Amino acid sequence: MFDVDGTLFSKRAAQTVFLSHLRAAGLLGRAAFARLVAIYLLHRVGLMDPVKARQRGLALLDGLPVARAEQMADRLAAELLPLVRAEARAEIAALRARGHYVLLVSASLGMVVRRLAAGLEADGCLASELVVVGDRCRGAYDGPVLEGREKWVALSRYADDRFGRGGWTLVAAYGDSVDDVALLEHAAEAVAVNARGGLARTAARRGWRQAAWR
Image 1 (cartoon, helix red, strand yellow):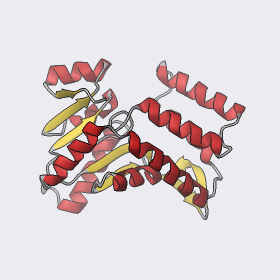
Image 2 (cartoon, helix red, strand yellow; image 1 turned 180 degrees about the horizontal axis):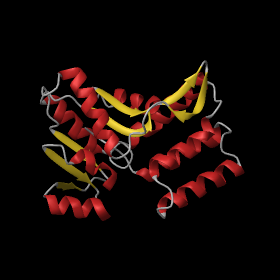
Image 3 (cartoon, helix red, strand yellow; image 1 turned 30 degrees about the vertical axis):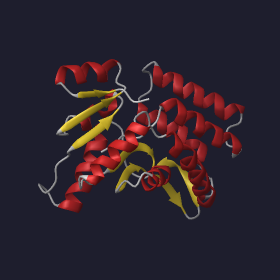
Image 4 (spheres, one colour; image 1 turned 90 degrees about the vertical axis):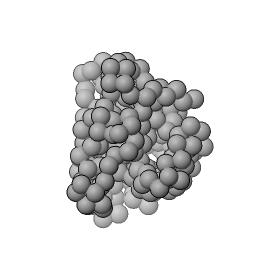
């Protein structure tokens, strides 16, 4: 299992690419940009939890035609794939060569994460999904946002359905933030990527591998 933002590539790179596409699509005027900045700052200082921050930010997509959103996802994934760290590509390839089933698990939108999984030749992905009504996107999530413990819940349900309860093991998990601890702690091998703060302390205390990826 691989987390996406911050693990496969830096969060800053992902944010820069995402914002550039919103701006190019005419979805990021001054008022919308100011709202995003306010959401980001509230989240950073701990006054807004990550799920609520994502829900507030999703309002930018409300009413967007699905076809246009899919086109944006195509372009976004095409720009993000070259930014995937060489170490992440190597780990994915090595795990698949050993016969392991590789998943990307992310709080990001499924329409983007699915394209990243295909481009990296992963076996599949789990991600947060957008509500679609008719041919329009709605500014809401269809189901849980895969933050924190929800990643493990989604992975367990998926693996139980695919391989049968008790018929699978989480061989390795890769994550870059304390948000990933709820999933990392269930892996036979937990890998903390470029860990800082709470994740670095947890990894050191539990003896997890800490990887420095460029």
